[in-house]
Amino acid sequence: MNKPKTIFTITAFFIVCLLNLTNSFAQTDAQMRQAEPSYEVVLHILTASNGAGGRQSVPQPLANVVKKLKNTYSFSNYHLDSTYLQRTAGSIEFKSVSNVLNQNQESFTPTFSDWSLVGIKSFPLAQEKKLIQFQSFRFGQRVPIRTSTGVVNYEQIGLSIQKISLPENVPTIIGSLSTSKPDELMFLVLTVKPTEE
Image 1 (cartoon, rainbow, N blue to C red):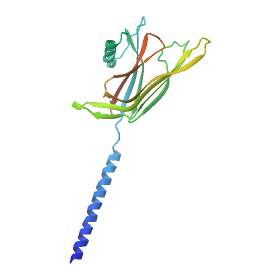
Image 2 (image 1 turned 90 degrees about the horizontal axis):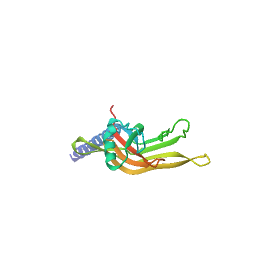
Image 3 (image 1 turned 120 degrees about the vertical axis):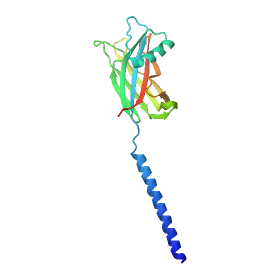
Image 4 (image 1 turned 45 degrees about the horizontal axis):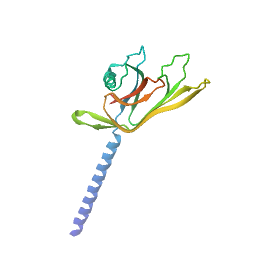
């Protein structure tokens, strides 16, 4: 009489364990199928100077950035040198030849640019806004330096940042670099937003 009760208890125990195990595998499988969100990352290179005949060509989305820079720096001219657009769900590494120094074709000596962004994540803020955070950002250039003998040597310049946060879809100044001209600065402006599928 006790034997059927024991068999029923053991069988019920194994069925409950099996159901819990199946449920736990189903949750893990659903979590694995959920893709990480993708982001559109735009890096703008702005150059500020006091040179005569300067250009004031900055797209409308960067108008507030230039306004903020004018409150901090005394440069009279701002212009957009380069725009880099990438899409990622995690990290970016970009390398290219560029003409950020705006050299003419006759004296053109290439400048090599590279930048990387590692470990992008999004965190909720108040009122449905989000904060974008990444583990590291690095921007570098190998710029040509002409010696008195006409030989071109390349010098590495750059900026490295560890763990930085910025508001989602807001152009944000993340750093500045000197250029080869004494009255000029280069500003790095980053905008990160979720991609629209």
